[in-house]
Image (tube, rainbow, N blue to C red; front, side, top):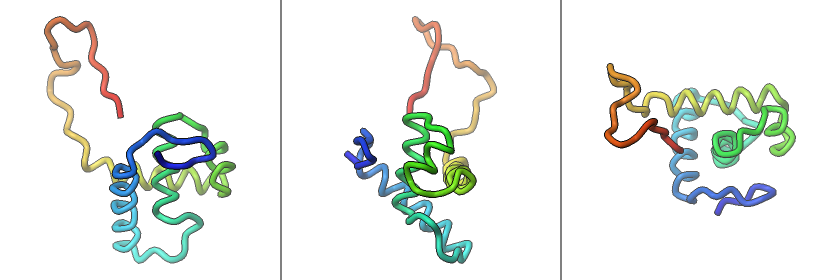
Length: 105
């Protein structure tokens, strides 16, 4: 479990993986000082995905502005987007015996 005022039920490996992606991007950009570490940014993004907190709530929890929370989440989504599988030509996919399909993070 990763601590977040309450516990966020995600594996530590997931946080570390996302942290490394964010840190790599920061290095490539030659990014100067940031309000949050790459670890804290990864936790913030996972909270956003898992709980759907608003950017104002995220900013409050992580002691950054609403705008900074928005930028940090969007930066991480930009890092994750190229790793997503491309959409198939046929959407939604046909699955026998299922009315609908859902993908969960």
